[in-house]
Structure formats: structure tokens, C-alpha cells
Length: 393
Ligand SMILES: Cc1ncc(COP(=O)(O)O)c(C=O)c1O
Image (cartoon, rainbow, N blue to C red):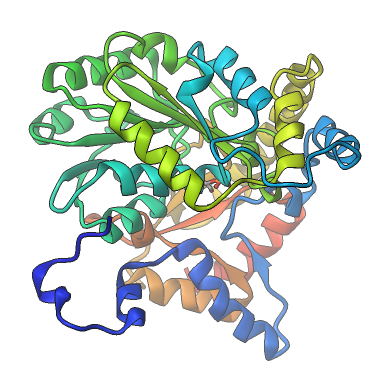
């Protein structure tokens, strides 16, 4: 149930509720389309949409969707998810199928999590910078957003977190992190888990990019956290299978804290009936397919090449950013003092024909002006884009 603050219980227009809903990654597209309508060619670097930049989805998904079209799955799927998909996710998660819920992309899982777990004024710890949906959902469900920092090495700043954690209802961890591209080490995660267990704070772990570690070791968070702290692990077909249009994600509940929240998930799943069944069948096949590791190796090789090309192109400009060690974004700081506000810079870039996301969309940045880009496109496109913005930097 949405709980509105008392002052908002007065009659309000439904559209007024929208003042808390924002998604900077796409909101900027409206402005870009206006430029495009004037005849400007735009390069879209605002969104991490791999197929847009030539990354082919994992082959098994389309194949299985086609064969599923001939099966008896034109009706509504079970609300909580296709049975086989839940079983296969449970195998990977090492939990019970009943602990798995299939959602319309992890986006819906995040929405359901806030809806079912975060009440008015309850503290939610978010990384800074964070994926913008978490800020928007915390606002929508009237949680109290508190940001924790990263240290100079892109690790979770545990000392900073320990000053903020008391009384928190939940902590969000995104690893690899969007937008920073940070990948947390085993030791860093172990320290965070220890802190969370001391303060009895459950974790929502966003593993949207969990297989896309480009440098360093990929840590299995589930193994580290199991039995130490209650957590929810979420992922989807969008990034690690390069199929965001499938709109298939899942969340797995770990630990014994979640009975009420799982009930709430059931109700929320019932309310929206079901997720596309053919794509669930495809997901069930894809996530356990034997050819996936070879596919993933190829994807990571391409990503690494694009990241390195990006670093050498962007590295020549008066900007700075931590080297992305995972996912496919860079969170960039302007080194010149030309721009006071990120939105002014992003609008100037739009006029030049390049679409970025303002850094403040990922949380307030105290020490400068930031924007986020994806490095997914081919080097020639990145080159063209950064050449266009050179003169406004
Ligand atoms: C960190 C993170 N979490 C969740 C999502 C949502 O992804 P989807 O709903 O496509 O699974 C995204 C999408 O960009 C993301 O970057």
C-alpha cells in the first residue's frame, strides 16, 4: 500500500503523484527526440541496451521462444513464474523454487521489493552513485534514502557505511555497479556482510551485471552471504544474456526473514497476472544451457575491447573517470570548471548531437559535475561522439 504523507492526503490530482517518478536515463530522450525532430543526428549513449550496439542476444533464447510458440503457453503463465524457470533459477541460487519469483525484468522486482518492504520514513541505504530507479522507488514508497560512499579504489567504504547503517531497513548493493563500473572484492563484500549481520540489515543484491566482470575475480555473493545475513538476489536476461527486450527477470529470497515479503510478492504478482510465457520458457532453457559459458567468454572479450578503445578515446579529453572493471558504463567527471550544473552540460551535449545522462540522476555528487555514458558502441561511434563534445568540455 502506498502511504502518503498527511499533507498529501488532501485531495490531489493523480498527475501530482508523478512528481516523485523519474528515470533520468530515459527522461533525457524526450529532449533528444526534439533535437532529432529539428534534423539533428543523435548518438545515444544514455542507455545500456546491448543489442542496439550490435551485441547479439544469447542464441538459445530466440530458438526456444520459437519452439514455445507451438506449445500450450498462450494463456497467462502462473503469476509467480513458470515452474521450470523457477526450478532452474533455484538450482543456480541454491534455494527452493518457492523462493523464486519471476518478474518483468529486474525493474519489476525492484518495484515489488520497495512496495512490499519499505514503509514510510524507513531508511534504505543506497550506493552513491546508484542506479536511478532505486532513488525513484524509495521516493515513491516514501522511504528515507541514505547514501553510502565508495572509496578511492571503487570499493564500498565500510567505515562510511558503518556510520550510517544503524536502524536501516535494507541496503542495496549493485555489483558490478552501474554507473561506476566498480567490482567489489571478496574481502570488501565479506566486510559489508559482517556489518549487515551485526546490525541485522537485510541486503537486496542487484546482480544485473553479475557475470560481466571484466577485471578481477567474479565473486559469488550467494556463497559469501548464505546463512550470514538474509538477502534477496536479483538478476535478469537483460544484460548478461543481452536480451533486455525479453523483459524477464527473477528474484530469489535467501534466509528465513522473508515469509511476509514473499506473501506480498505473491499478491503483487497475482495483481499483474503474469510475465510473457514464451520468454519464460526461453529463459528456463538459456540459464542452464551448456553453450552459455562460451557465449559469455565471447561477449566479455568484445566488451573488454570496447572498454579499452573507450579509455583511449576519452582519456585524451579533460575528463576523468575510474576505469570500469565491470558492466558497460563510465561515470565521468568534468575536469574544467566551465559547467556548474550537469544538466546544462548534458543539454549542451544534446545540441552537439550526443545523449548522456546527468550525474545527479545517480545521486547527489558533491565534488563536481558528472555524467554517465555507456561504452557499448563501436569505437568509431565513441570517437565521433567525443569529438563532437570536445569543444564544449
Ligand atoms: C543496476 C540495474 N538494475 C536493474 C536494471 C533493470 O534491468 P531490467 O529490468 O532490464 O532487468 C538495470 C537496467 O539498466 C540496471 O542497470
